[in-house]
Image (cartoon, rainbow, N blue to C red; front, side, top):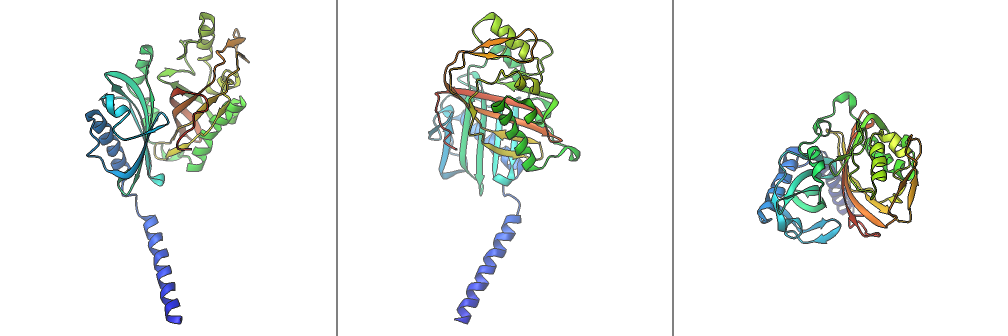
Length: 325
């Protein structure tokens, strides 16, 4: 019994030691490997041929929340890979890489927010969120990504991983509570949605979504000149019932990026919004319809503050669930 117990004890200690050593080893797919895998994946889509990709057996693939087979969906009509508008977020800690870019399907531009999970060199999870029907007057903001979203964060402005997650999560909290001070917005915070700049415009510009009347569109253009904090405080986003799940999935500490796949829930019934604190803008009429919106959203965090937000999304039926929830 003593010998058997000793052997068991030895084996147990050996396993613990091996696990400890393995945990300290670098991810076999580092930043260069991860971004290269994204490029290979996108190129394979345009060729409509996934056979050369390191796909794990049973790889899971979703597109706009629908679970489908690799080779379907965007794989059918992809006609040009992203060229100049490309944002990568690499998270070795979770073995994931996310990508936000502009590519073409049947020669028409679309925005893709994508996530790959890579385990032991194999792609085990693929997630696409696609925004089609991009307005032509928004394409000027989709030629190249803003420099802040591409640059490394210097050592003085690095933010701890959990603080980055909390900062991005507080953005969703601020919307749900209609209180801009909940989120650590920087003074220069600038949000883009499907290519349209929706905060800090120097002069009023059309909102990305047509509200159905010249007066409403003009008022929303004024609201687009507000800061990130002031815009939340105006209550213009109060038609959003809930943001859940938020899925802050990819944290790139080197770039200061939090890449999330939140689900915006619109219960409906909001026919108008009483605007607060915006001179000349009193009430914004709303359609009141029900819907969900699956988004892909990037937050750039420097010094604990949110500086850039790049968002896209696709409207889905109300009650749609995230398959990754």
